[in-house]
Length: 206
Image (cartoon, rainbow, N blue to C red; front, top):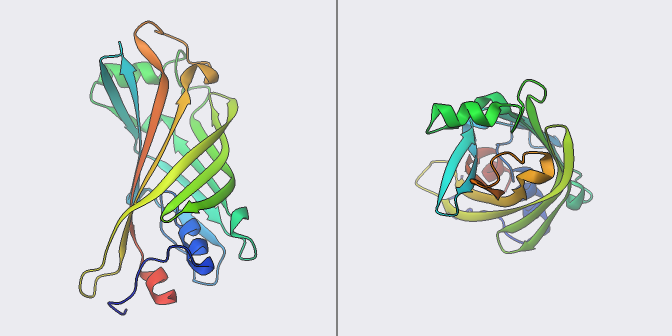
C-alpha cells in the first residue's frame, strides 16, 4: 500500500466505494463483487432521549447485521439493508433497559427486530452522504433519513487506512406507537452511529 493513498472524496469511483462502506461494516467480498456484509464488530448503534427536558438518557444496540448491494452503473441505486436485534439493547440502568423492551415501547416479544432499508444514497458534499430509506419499528414503517459524515481518516506506516464515520438522524417515537410516559420522556429520539472502518481491500483497489 502506498503512503500517498487517500480516502476518495468526490470522484465517481470514490463515491461508489464510500457508498459501499457507508453504514456499520466493512467489505467482506472480493473487490469485483457487488454484495457486502455488514459487520457489527466495526460499529455501534446508539440512541438518546430527553428526560423532563433536563438531561438525556442514552442506550445502544449491541447486535445488528445486514448487507450493502451496489449497482456499479448507478451508485444512487446502492441498497443498504440493516436489521437490529432489539433484545440486545444496553443502557446504564437495567430497569430502563427492561422498560424499553416492554410492550409500551419496542415490544420485543412481538417485534424482535428493527429494520432499515435504504431507497437512495446521495453524496451531497465533501465527505457527506444523505441516506434515505424506510425504517420499521414495532411493525410500523416510516420514511427515514440519515446523514453520514466522514469525520477523520488515518494512515500510519504500513497499517491499512482507517476511516471514521458519524451517522446521525432523529425520529418521533410516537410515530411508531411508543407514546408511554409522554410527560416524562421527550418524543424526539436522536440516533447516533459511530463507525470505525479498516479498509485494506479499498486501499488495494486504488
